[in-house]
Length: 474
Image (cartoon, rainbow, N blue to C red):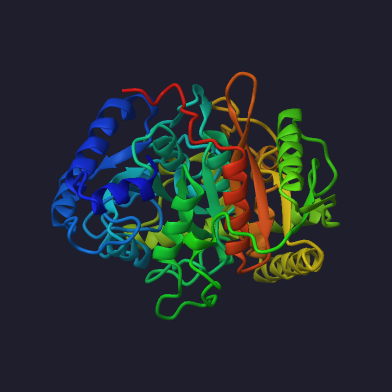
């Protein structure tokens, strides 16, 4: 069952929170050795929280008593290890809860552990040296995507119904596509990043979850959205709750779709087929569908995004250096992170601010495009899931060339981190050999309710809940 369904069982007294937690722990113990999704267990803490959860007689929210996992990045939990996938952070322990963690606890979610990610979330595949590769439940030889690959594998395999994730260049949407899940990157500032951060990676990063159902994604956003104290960005409340918005579309939408990258390049036929299928579904639902895309210079987007990312990685390495109280050695940091940080340190302040300015100009182009279109559909990725090891970086490689390879895998997701727009990957297509292929829907800033309304319609028209990966049976 999805998270909302499990919470309903708790409210109705059919199961207790502790029974749900014990069932999830059993699945983690049975299946995690096969997929390596959960890298830190918090079973004692979770069971203690489950025992404190309200009984069926007490009023609870739509997620109360549901098992949950945190990605080991940003959503810190006081007293628990915080390593961000890095050997350099071995032994580091969080001193306080992140605001997002507090909100998950307040929503009644039962946190049972932490999930795997590439070192410091850099890269579109989850294969850190520290913990090893996370394996895709649909095919263990394939990547889960990244950086929220541990979270996605855990949810796809049914260890928990939803899990925390974050997204700085597609890190929610990429693994959602690879693992057959719903993955919403909310608008910039919709979910809190405090108290440690006002923004992460210069505003590129957004926090949320991966889930198996649209209503779970919506219910989680209801539980967490809104600014925390001192937040640099924030949005007002939507016209309705996000959960009420699912499947509710008050008028026909004008929807653009594209089978090509923003620069007009061809992509894998399975990804093209996925977006064509989604466009046809939208048309059958009464929406106006037009083949169109914003006129973006993809080289400008790639170059400036990558410069901004390099500076962000350099700043991230400085941040963890402060946590550890010493400089890292090169052999403690993986090649991609080390090389990106070194390149970032060599980018001047003037170059960085010019890159920000140029990405803001792209954002204005996209905003003008969305004056005519409520939603844009793209493939989530340029390829179906790729084999583990596809993005290994050798010492001394040119990090920008490595990023080129990664960009060809995920040419659609990074734009919305630059613009701040909400975007969701939906599992609407599977290849002949049984691998999921996501379709991305993008809306205007602050219009998650529009995306969730359309997503709910598509879920009802082309349901995916019946699909289960091979690695899901205990």
